[in-house]
Image 1: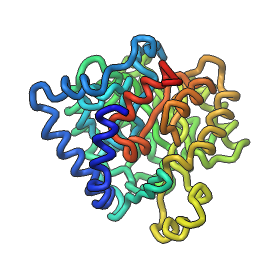
Image 2: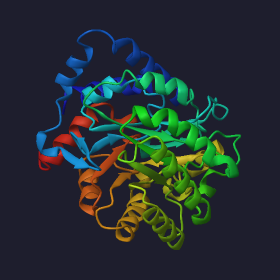
Image 3: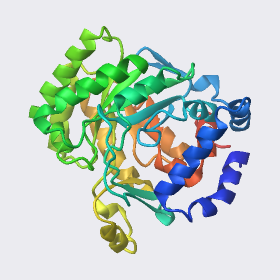
Image 4: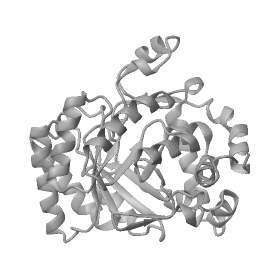
Length: 352
């Protein structure tokens, strides 16, 4: 076991005495203090070890040092990019970023079930706004692929959603390597309705026009889908995405399905109220959606696998299904920063 994995196992009980959001704030606060200190990220990179050159790949014309990325939702404001690079991530997806600042949903809005490796969140796109995040991205580290995950503001109607996505895109897209359109979070009222083919088609067409206006036609544009779609609906959505000329799909976001929680913990989760679930229990559901999308989408169209991936075996399974890129989030909370190098190592040498 690596030093980072064992150190986190020692510290986790102390960290988990805090509620999840204060614990997140503490970890990020310490990271922001340590990150600028000379030699800190070099030391972290030495402890973590960097991805084997054999893991490198080209996707959508971008060079990824590893297929393993950090999913959107953890570093919403692009605050710890040098640290993520030092840990060995091949790419980082920041956000979700909304065009205008908003506080998100009332607290408490983040919960964890450590015994099941599950997280429930109803953060509601808490965001500093695209202008603030775009300024921070101007100082991004070199050698790390960065994606920008974009969403609409809570008070923006579904009819005006395109205006919000365009505003966020104009600010964020010039500062990142790819963008992802989040229409699948369950925590912004009405957002998932944008996945319906009749709403999705004009949204994607409008964003592609904006991309052309900014002369960013070569920059990849993805859309992130939910795991709770019916099979026929999912097929229709994939057909719209493929026909639009969009570059790829990310799946999946969090689920509203409380059936992934054990019966013993289900009453507690029901008492917590609304929100999307992520973590170990989402793995099978996410894989079912992933495989259906991959069978439906055109051959060679890039896909990012997300949802329930927590170790090297899960990562290899997603790659074997046909996803050239994978993302983690919840597993990082429960297993710590050493998980990144552990998965990279297991992708090269599964038996070690």
